[in-house]
Image: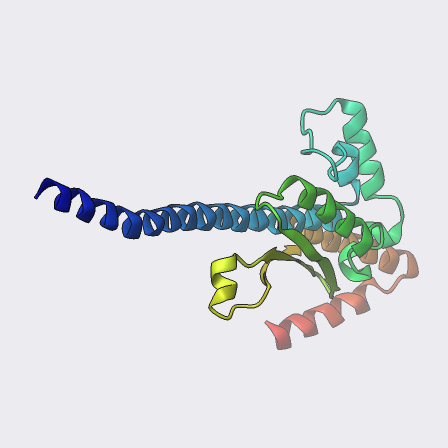
Length: 220
């Protein structure tokens, strides 16, 4: 009787043990896949977020090398002066909301930043980033940045046995808007003051005031 029980246990172990191993390794693989997914999300969100800062604030680079490390906000007065100099370099930069964000950077620069992050967020063994793209959609008053990564990884042998392709691809993307509302309001106010001064110099302030009153009447 004991021999029969031992035999039954051996048969059950032979059947169950591979299933247990398969389940354990599947859970580990899925856990690594989820970790890789979160790393990709961090990657695209950081590129979109810091890219928006670079586009909206021309002096952002003076605070640190954003492509290789976090920005250092503990700056001395000289750094602050450099920041404001870069933000007021010329009229296109000063009125960047109207001129279009991003004349001081490019998609290739942000893509380089994306590739640097990709090297530090590769977790899943055997996988690789197939395509890293950063798109800058410039528009009036605001510019949208979209960062997207594609990660390809080999399909486990068990999945290939059931008809899955040799490799699978997973995408992750994030968007951010480059906009500085406070600075835009300030620039509009300065432009209004400049228009008032010019109208006084030309002696047409009264006529200009009538025009403005008419606009307020019909618009507001």
